Image 1 (cartoon, each protein chain N blue to C red):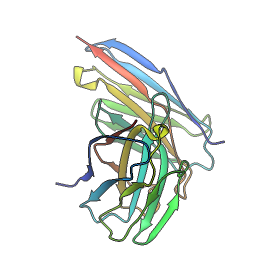
Image 2: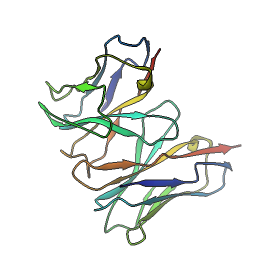
Image 3: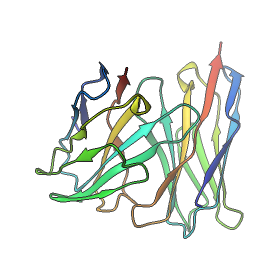
Image 4: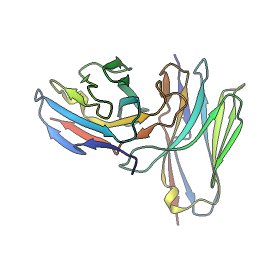
Length: 111
Length: 115
């Protein structure tokens, strides 16, 4: 069964600190991997998308990495801000409308 | 402004009372999809549509119906809602016909409670 596992489930950090969220997947074949940010009570918003040939992609203070060999991805957040408090969802696509969503990591940034 | 609009945003209903959640997008996207989100679980796809009059089941289609009569609209229909359909629902659209490489744009969500 194609699965996407995210860790940790939740994370609390202090404002200004960095953090890294993990995503491991077994989806095959692999088409692309996306990271989404979901604020409480809102719809997910795309942060990055990476295909097989890309191993890093940045969007401001967010940097995603992909290791297609080990089927792992990470999302690194630099100099966290209070507005980074949200759930971060990893989505892996196998193509042909087969998209698998992770359960998300709930990040809380405290002042 | 490019957006996906869902209505209603919040709804409390009773078992068996038919309801429809509307979804409309103004980006001329071919691909549209419905998901439900439950605590501790990832988003699960209910139905999707690759274009007008083309719909197909996702992972959890039981108890739901959809239609795609116009490109911009993709309503989700619960003919006889049950308490296990209490959930947060999201509609999404994408320019890519299979939603694979294009960015998925999500609506703001519809929180449904079935008593």
